[in-house]
Length: 136
Ligand SMILES: [Ca+2]
Ligand SMILES: [Ca+2]
Image (cartoon, rainbow, N blue to C red; front, side, top):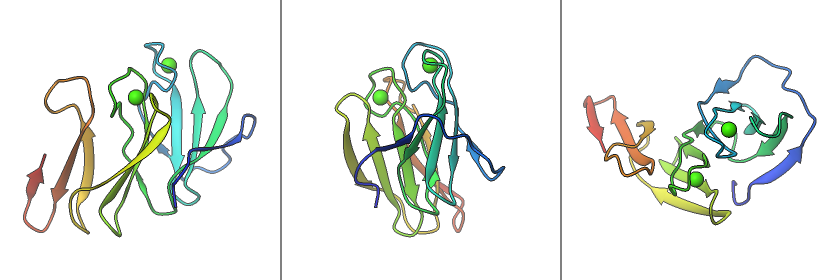
C-alpha cells in the first residue's frame, strides 16, 4: 500500500530496462528532472536537476501506473500512481507532504493526467477502451 512516500536510497542505480520514463520537475527549479518508475517493484528513480544525484523512492504497489503531475499546483511534480485493479489514484502532494486518494474511473480504464482546464494543477482523466469514451 502506498501510504507514505519512503526514501529508499540516495545512491542506488537503476539496473533493469523495464522502467517507464516520466517528464517531471520534482525539485521545482523549472528544469526537467530525469525520472523513471519501475512497475515491477513500484520504485521511482529521480535525478533532480538541482541536486545532480540519484534518489530512489518507494511509492505505489506492483502493477501501478505512474501518473505524475503537479496535482497541488505548487510548481513541483507530485508522485502519483493509478491502480488499475481498483481504479484508485494515489497522489503524494509535494506541498503538504501528504497522501490523497481518489476513486475515479473504472477497472479497465486507461489513466491519463494533464492540466485539462489550464489552472496550473494536474487533472484526472481516463479513457475507457470498451466504449472509446474519455472521462475528464
Ligand atoms: Ca528540476
Ligand atoms: Ca506539486
